Length: 237
Image 1 (cartoon, helix red, strand yellow):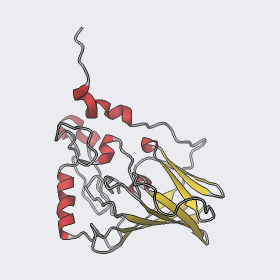
Image 2 (image 1 turned 180 degrees about the horizontal axis):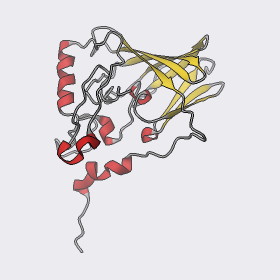
Image 3 (image 1 turned 120 degrees about the vertical axis):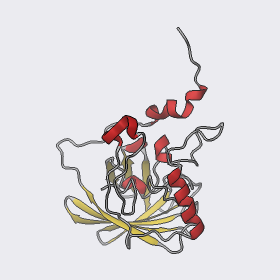
Image 4 (image 1 turned 180 degrees about the vertical axis):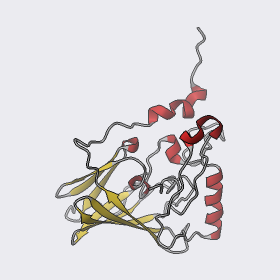
């Protein structure tokens, strides 16, 4: 699945710096995961989406190069947000307890805590906006339903510039389909950006390798020079 490149249908692309990376940096084409095939943007929001796509590799546009509101935030190792964390090309682990469900993502060590309905001590409203949102869950039969809001308005849905505002509201449904598959569905609502709610859906596949585990991918170390290089002192020897 190539939804992290574009959640809608997309052709293969050369990717960044084809003169250096060649086929290594190419992005494959793929089928979209958006129900109905198209995201219902407001006209002004669609223009912003296209601007995002054009500037997705931009970092140094001002004297403050570590800004997270320009270019794809995932390029700079910021948390991927929801639902993007679930279809990036990195595994994640679901841990269930009586009071919470935890989702640990390999990318950027992102972590979600989903508070289940029997934990009355947890506030229903988000105490503050965050990259991964504030989530409450409950079960409808075998389906885990997760209601999330309180998102910081910086994360994107993909590399194609699809985005949201601070009004984002996501309702996810995780339904077991077999011992090895979970059907995933997310309903996206944001009246600042979209004309109506819309859905995406796809299967999640259980990793079956022996001794499978999350390995360390703290991507910050790979972007330090990218973000802060101009502040480092060069020492000539």
